[in-house]
Length: 433
Length: 167
Image: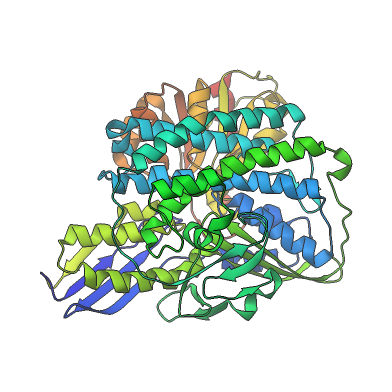
């Protein structure tokens, strides 16, 4: 038993992942808890200034290799709103289709490669290949399926080229759409096997109710478009995000913290699930039920399960979207909208795999960016991760050092932050035990 | 691991699409971390490489697994902390990979999984693709566009090395 603990998580050496975690516990109470991760978008905001309207989506897609479609779409939506560009319904449907598969790419990577090793009690995905080869092979097949989808529609599997303001530079062929449909249909056995595996894992028993924020709309499980909705009972149009979401500077971190109704909130798969459960496909709901995931869920560790349920939904809904696009007929006349290069302000809000993503641009009268503000989901989750750990650590204070470390690491990883890969290598030092 | 030696190979030969894939990794908005992307952009401009599969891999590392399964040989260009002089280029062949993994050199650009991790997975999955990694020790990986002069000047030599490798 320990009354006083000082946990220091050393910065890890990888470029994308200089994370720090400091927890000081005295007399079983958390005296100080600080969690720091870098926030690259600040550089990109400055870089966008002066760029022509065609450029921001290509530049911001490079912020993250895992969220490149999300940044592309948020950027495009902001520009289209600012310049009053109206993409066709065909364009919107194709964007929703490609969007599903970045979510699948990212969720599969996180669930199978980064989180699964925790649940199977192995250090990383490498030993998992020996202990659970079927899990790794399923993961590779699902990730490849999603990569193929993004490549067929976006032109390449990462940093898509064909998705531009106004529409697409090239459409997939009908044959390619049918091939996508066939690939999607073929992945269900792997999803069923995954379900059986996931049913055997034990998710840590920890709950802390917080505010859950995501986009939401009346007609679908929202990923690409919708109002911003909170489980605390408010809903606003995406352009008005700053009425509710406030960024604040905190002393201990170079990253801003975000708050809305409370002092922190959660975004990501679990927030989407809590807000939009009813819009999941019936099949996805059945998977959720089998895995004990019910809305509202206040266990952040269940974010991993929500991510898996979203994979099911995305596969189901992609088949629906393909059928609809094919029924309407792919029409090159609807491939690009008229582009105007005036001025104005536009906000693009989407759900990146990790949660709400906001691009807010002001264009001058000549179609050049005058000001840009990007709010990323990992940044929004900082404060909530801290609050979760403040609640968690006193509850597990009697456990061993290794167990405390693992619980904290798993909690951070459950949020799937952009440093999730690096946090597999946390060095935790306990003092005063 | 062998140190890079510049070779002078002309651009007169046309390379045919074979089972070779060339992939550059990195973030071109993080200074020298973008060396892999910059090299593939240069290769795409060359007529002699028009028939070769050249991929801008960005910062998505796991895609390497699929490529490894689908082709006989992969040439990877990436910023790698080799722990020696900045701008130094190293060529790591399949036979050197075990040593590379053991030394756990940090690939600076693969966002999701580290290059060493990806190579370990390839090994564990018994994928027998031939791999050549051309790694460049960066001078600066801060946010910003453009390469440091000491890294920029290595590009012609890296391209010559790739030509030699696929000829």
